[in-house]
Image 1 (cartoon, rainbow, N blue to C red):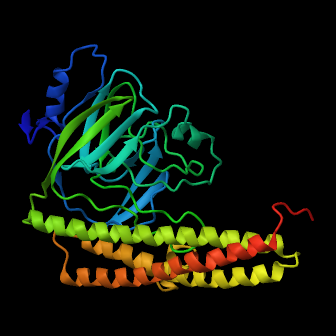
Image 2 (image 1 turned 30 degrees about the horizontal axis):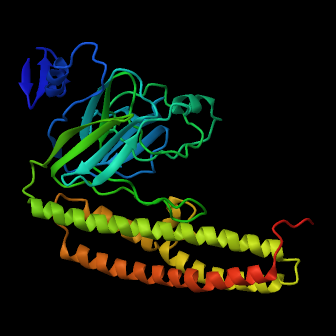
Image 3 (image 1 turned 135 degrees about the vertical axis):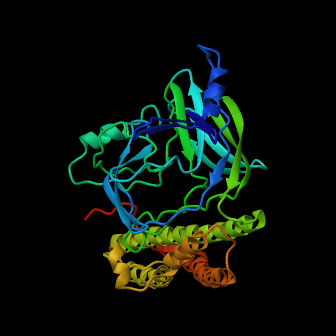
Length: 405
């Protein structure tokens, strides 16, 4: 029995060994009075930001998944717990420790719907906030059991590392889950939440077809000092977080900061492109609606022509931002990738090493930013000039709010 790097390691003279992670937590728990009536936030252990290998495969869904990494195919089961957490259970490879900062807190009673975990930088700026599942929200595991066979849930990024713990229910394929935000556990007793060092993901494209399935993840924060705030109702506690650099590399703090700054810019570009696509599709849907409603009116032809002209401008921008012809991942082999995919791919290249970005990556970012800005400028002109003109036309045409055929 030995203590190594803050963990307790036990081994036999045979083939078995066990590791109890984070003795510092055990020591902190020993200081909590038995029967304490207030929540207690424990100080997380110092966490190294390790470099990581990138895997290939389809986006993870609840149920059986496969990924390809480092020349090996691995399988895992993914499921949502009744508390709203997404957890993975690896089937044929080992389970690594949590990938990120593990925050532990003790609750005297269940706090569903009134607990938040907020991660902030050293200056207090919010990086990301996680909430507990609402008390009246149906447990995801229960929803999965009641779902129709064959339906899938496009799960979002997990708040815990792959395989951190076993799912609380047998993995199933649930109905569509529109709320894929990671949830902070809020059960009575000891709770653990693994922060992946990232902020909120970029905006999803919420409707229509096209190459929407690009990486929306925010970049990991660089090594440094941070803090976490646990809020239960009106009571709040804070604890310091220290993120250390990968001990295997010689990357300087300045290089980490340069990488993070460029990745944040790229992340904002993906977010801006997807928000623009959502705006275009929302306006286009309404243009189609007004065209349909007015088609039998005297002003119908003029409204249809104006709508068609405006949609043409919007579609031209949309087709630069996203490959609208793609219906699956394989379609990206048949049609050229557009700006959202190019920008997301650049983020993957910049984050692929624990190092400062290269000059070529910075130059490519500038080029993509210019091309994105041009398209967003065209969109703003159309929404600022052509759209008000269309609204005026509809208003003057006095199209009835309800038309009975």
